[in-house]
Length: 264
Image 1 (cartoon, one colour):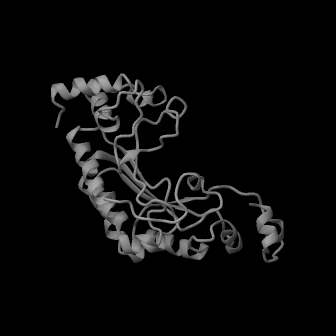
Image 2: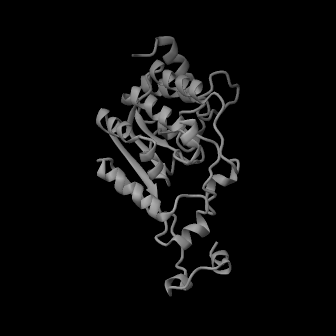
Image 3: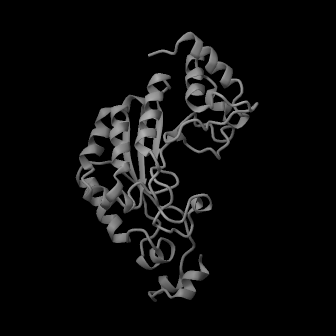
């Protein structure tokens, strides 16, 4: 599918107004590709002289805070399936702008379908997609809402629009228990790369309780990783963020509230 000539003209006019820090994502693209990116990401009716990639409602620009001049990765997508997160991680940067309690997004399915239809309508160049930067897609809310499964099913339908699919979670075991393994396999075999990234910064449960009080235990995460690997699903272990050592814990003593607070 190609954009109609008038859409290319409109898109290129929008692209010329993109804010400077996002402009590198438009470089080294054909006029058709530049127009497609602009039509999808940039607001069409804005009168602002400089435009930011704020148009999509669900399948959004990967990181609106990053300056593409110093982080020249081209365009990428991110779906933050839920707002907020139940893990209550002490170090979470998203806590600065996300609500403290997890919730579903209003009209999530409708807006997801619209964004994916627009990717097709504007023939946007394929790029990586991530779930999720600011929330865990497999937090307990997924068991009742099922929005992550829905998002992945729809991504599978539009798989050629995504060069890779990455799911970041602290709860791989829940993904297995909810029966998502076959879906993961389909995503991996359809087109491009697919993997589950599991965040596990601690190997002692005492540290996990201090920093990830609402997240799954260390053993639950290890169990989930093993079950995914046994099913043939690619898993990346993310040992981040990095923390100083806990002297009391290194000596074999149990952590107390004082030692945990000291290292927060």
